[in-house]
Length: 400
Image (cartoon, rainbow, N blue to C red; front, top):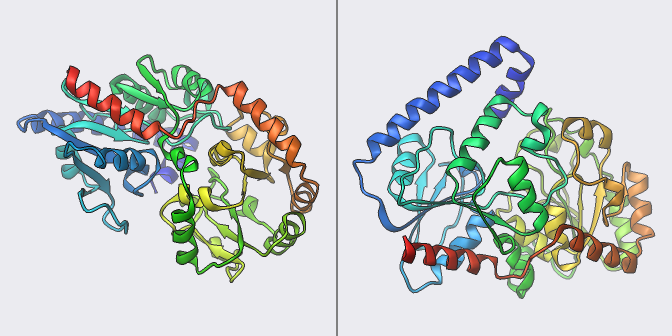
C-alpha cells in the first residue's frame, strides 16, 4: 500500500507535495520519540535485526544471527517482524512486533542494529551504538538511488541519505558493490568487503537444505528449476507470463532427468498471480517458502529477469537463464549497470527464445563468461562473510 501511495504521489504534484511534508513532519515526531526513549539505557550485547522492513526472517541478517548464536558470549538477539508473519525463529532469538513503540524502544536500547533495508527517516542512533547495513542486493543489474537520481522520489532520496549518514558499516561482496555504495548511496563510512553473509550457504554442504525443500514440497528424485522474477513498479503481471510446460520439456531435453519448476514471486507481485499461474505437481508455488537462499542453494537452474539473485546463484558457477519480455520498458524505468546481452546468463525475451537458449546452452562458454564477470566486479565471496561480520562486532565491542 505504501508503494502504491508513493507511485500515485509521483504522478500528482499536489499530492506529492503534501506527502513529502507529512513525511518530514513524521520524521521529526519520530526523532522526538527516540529522544524520550533515551531515558532507558543501551543494553550491552543486545542486537536488533530486521529484514524487508519486518516482512521476513531471512537475508543477510539471518545468517549473521546464526553466526552470533554460535558464539560463547550470550547475545540478546531481537528480530522485528510483522504480527501476521509466520516464522520459526531459533529458541534464543526474541521476536518483537513491528509497531512504533516496540521498534522505537528496541532500537533505542540496543547496542547493535543489523538491517538489510533502510531505517525510517527520523530514527535516532546514540553514540554507543553500531549500525550495520547489509543491504539486500549485491552488484545488481538495476541502477539504484544516486545513479538514477531523476527517477527516485524525494522520500527515497532523503531516507537513503539519512541512513547512509547514521550507518557505521556497510557489508560488501565485491569492489563493484563498494563503488555503488559510495556513489549511489552517498556513503563515506566504513565498508567491510567480506562477501554476502547470505551467500555463505553456497560454500556449505547443501544436503540438509535439499532435504528441507524436498520435504516441504513433497519432491523426490527430481531436478528443480526456480523461476524468481523481480517486481514491476506498476504491479503488473503480464511480463511474468511463462510457458511452464514448454520450459519443463526444454530442461529435460537439454539436461535430462525429470524436472519440476518452483515459482517464487516477489512480495509486490503476489496478488492475482494465480489468475494465470496454474500450479500442479510440476509447477509448484514456492512463494510461501521463507528462505530464498535455501531455494537458490538446492535448485539446479534459475530463471529470473532483473533480480540480483542471478548473481547470488552464480556464486558457485550455477546455471542461470534470463527471461525478460519488457527489456526496454524496464530500462526506461530503472536502467541497468550491465547490458543484458553482455552478462554470462543467456537472455530470452519470449517463450520461444527461452526454449532455444536452453537447448543450445554451452556450459564451457558459460563458465568462462562467469569467471570474466567475477574478475570485472572484483568478487570476494569466501563462505566466511557471517563470521567476518561477527568478528567485526566483537572487536568493536572491545574497542568502544
